[in-house]
Amino acid sequence: MKHCLLKLFILFFLGMFSGCDSKQTGHFGIKFSSNNLSNQWDCKFYYLDGGIKGNFTAKKDDAQLVYSSAIENGTVDFQLYNSKDSLLVIIPTNNNADTIIGIFEKGQQYKVRATAKQAKGRFNFKME
Image 1 (cartoon, rainbow, N blue to C red):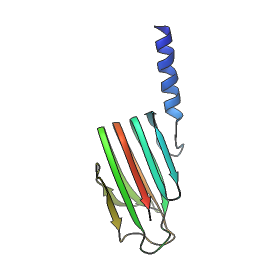
Image 2: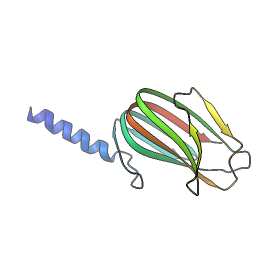
Image 3: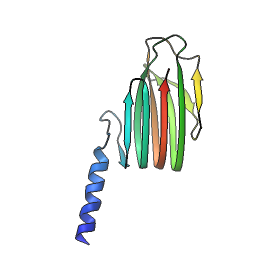
């Protein structure tokens, strides 16, 4: 019994800091992986609760944000913000693939905030 509790505590502790963004309000993830490199954000998780974000920079005038998500359990709400922290778009969940076009300005920075509630699944965003 003590061994099981110790394993549970270790999983909890590791999950709290796995891929944690200190600027976020916080999240808890189990089997959580998140990579936000080269204008692409990939995230997979067995369990996720809380907020995380991905950052993007529009490198051309006709930039577009291509995204997909597959949430098996729980919910994940996605919101796109500009560099002034103004909400631009609420992004639908569970899309095979979709694209946001016509709102990005070259050289400007954007972020997608994902707020998960007891969720399991994956998502991907890429600014082209």
